[in-house]
Image 1 (cartoon, rainbow, N blue to C red):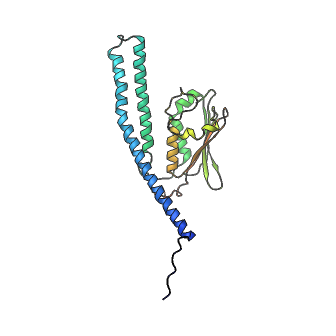
Image 2: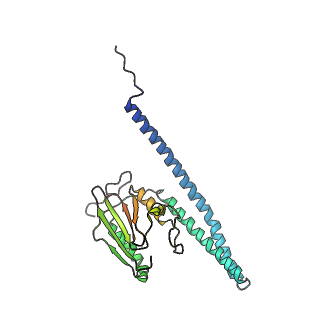
Length: 249
């Protein structure tokens, strides 16, 4: 009976398989660790919310109950304590929003980006009117604030292998050295007096990546900014439950 050939440990196929398996194990371990860190961040943020709220409330009560008994400096300090407490609560709430993304399984349905854009603009009508802004939304999509009057364009570009949606403005622009930083939490560039916590784009990035898309920015100082992002066409998303449309619906 002929002997079976011994497996050659230097066989490139075996080595490739070992490398792939090691990479998969490492990836699974890193993902588990990332999930643990996100849960930890959510728990810490939740625990910090109570003290921040109490700090703001106590400062407010002191201002009300002892009105006229403090000098101007003390009143100013109490106002700063209250403002700091409210800011801290706002930041904690944004951290919680970021941590919750992807923790709940979503059922994917067909979405018309133009309809979503119109709904968002409807909720911002007052702000758009006050700013004298002009917002243009492309007519056809695939199924899926400054010194001069703002001009915003929302559209879509079809490329060879993907469909890219974009939001373009005529604002102050972003230096190329900051293109990556703006997607990190609490990175607020430019005017520090503009309201916001600096976590909005981090939330955007996480949501888009959750749906297997990508987001990036192209900009030039004083010439505006364009945010591009991709999302899979309906039916192309893998690993996410799809809602089946009824016939005739």
